[in-house]
Image: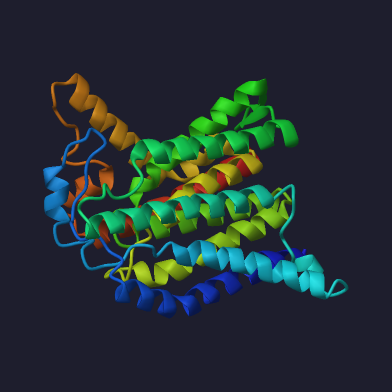
Length: 352
């Protein structure tokens, strides 16, 4: 038991301090090469420029680098490799017990994190290049990113169905429901929904706080399910996020951007299915759920109600901004809500 606790928390501490240590080098590079957007604002999913959002953010994003998410996935990847390497060098030492890289628990989430993050990195670099050179479109299109996420989802679903033999979903307080091959489209759907929640990365500290809480909750679930390697992986991700968050609280030194949020959302899908708690995910990650739901409601309202909006601007955290809430107030309340709901979701998952 003691060694399991140490195995879960020691690597996360390494990831946190590793992330802090690499930040000065990354920050110097990002500012030296002006790795930020040259034009503020965004285009909404319906293809229009949201005037309220662009007014609220007309002085943001410009002058603050993107690519801060590199801290997260690099610190995670290096930490995994360090503990694996130490176990190989000293096979009769405690490092063997601390190594948490395993085929059945951490290969797939680590693969997903790295692939998703690299895809996000490519998108960020192209977007920055597009801002430097207006002849370039800038960034991967939403359809291309959606296609990549769908392919990742299919790979993950194939692994779960054919390699791990998963064909059931756990319904809290009811039991297992066998759905057979339908687990494949269900898995892909969850990954796409979580990918859509990536727009929560819109205020200083918001995405980092919410994601850290969510992965910490899944670390607790995995630990009590005796998936110690997965619990360790989840805390390592949490450690990497907290290192990023240290520099992302207002005023942000850099933004997470796609290279952070894309890897995290896709990896979260894997972790949720490995812990058989996919149906509890909307509760554990309620801020992400609210983000996706508010976007869907807004788009549906504008389409079926002759352009009428439910929110001043979507997603919901920007609606609160438009109402006059200071950004830090929105972020702090999302953090509080995220912590409370993560605890509730953990309880439901463990006793349900």
